[in-house]
Length: 398
Image 1 (cartoon, helix red, strand yellow):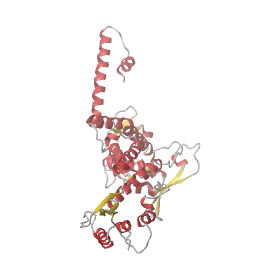
Image 2: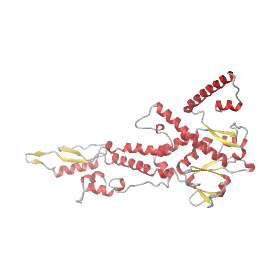
Image 3: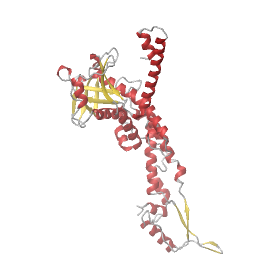
Image 4: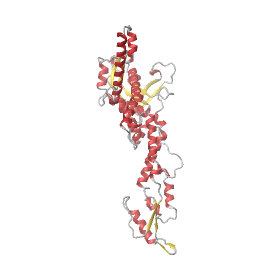
């Protein structure tokens, strides 16, 4: 009959064992009475991405910021190229369901979860490519050649790729038809270890504290003892067995938001620990900061119980773009340029972030600095000093 938490508390059973301790012993996996640490399985990053809101928030924010860059094709002189037909067509319509920013977003999410990102981009006749489809990294396997040294091309290390539609059926994709992007871990040339493995402990703690909060809200919010408050000259009087039975039955039958009504004179002695002193929210903030730091973002881009000023948010976003988003997006576009064969043509794809509002301040500062340098050069020339073209460029910082 002990199928209710409060039944366990009051021991309403024919057994003589301590029901409260029995409850704790039988529910060690509910994070009460557990002696050993419980860690999440980091071999399933996408499941953690769906399960832990803090992880998904950080990865999605990084992906959206990287996808905000506008694709631009430039030549070796840094001039914008607008007459490269198949590249322009690929950017305008990369695949039937996604825009170019969607493609970059998907690649960023896969890179954030697996440190590897794949896109099917078949080479057509005359080296034209008119389709690029991001693939889930968890469904792609690399068939390695086993050779690493003295290899000048990707094909020297990777024979091909296998894309699995399900557990058994797969399709082989050749080297020239796949774009492979990874974030190096400093050790592995291909298939590097992802950042999720580094976050094993904070992710485990986040899941544990969510479960503990749920247990507190659902079951353990009012642990305590109802005791008799009757006494006479001889001291305290025990509660009448009939009254005790009635209170037990009333408590068991009630809903979580109902109170016990009794004519008995009873006292309530709380046994629970104040939730605030458990510091669950402080633990959550600390673990969330570990995730934010791992992806190089700023804490001020995310909701916080302490709040953030406009200046903190503005500067946090600006520094995130400068220190993380722009460099990592440049690396992604450089890999795309190389694997699409554009670098062999003296071309490269770049991401333009000049339209981002928080970066406009930097452009104004650069423009003011250029005006000051130009005025300085003009004054030097007006004073009669002759400057060569190279000297003028050096003074202008060009």
